[in-house]
Image: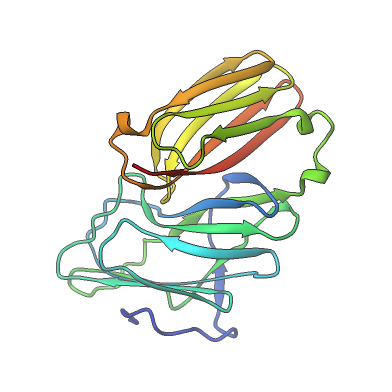
Length: 246
């Protein structure tokens, strides 16, 4: 097992699609966070070696974030290589997130494509170096579209956060062109939920929500404001990168 993450698999290595039926809707040329999760967070893992490949003609992987100490990684030439090992079991967040990718779609992705594929060299082992066959990764599928491709009604949606960077209180303003079910979330740079600000049906019009990072004990850093709207005749999803500075 390549525990230092330095090995770059050749393009001829066999790969398999990463299973997941969930879809994230994003806008072309805007950053979004894509968590890479294990199918079960209860494993006592002693070593992890992950080799993922992706189509760099469709997406650009800008960075990798993880809350797991000692995890090594490289992102190069369409490959993501991750390695971790220890004599103590790996502590995985309860939602199963192993690491999170910061990604930008660079063109339309219209058919919920499988963008990421796992190499046959990917392995998970227990504390006794026994390879585990029932551990696998899960990554949401992606649907990306240009703003010029959205319908006239969708173009009336809006999400804005200010001041940004924020030191005290963030004002989140959004516009709904029709009634709809709204979810408004704050997540950290790993894609983990900080808080749900709105989760309710709302009427069309302008809406404003206040968010004070200090109330949640947040450290200085990058966070994301995410909105997901299921309208009467349309859908809207958007993400705004927010910098919190104490």
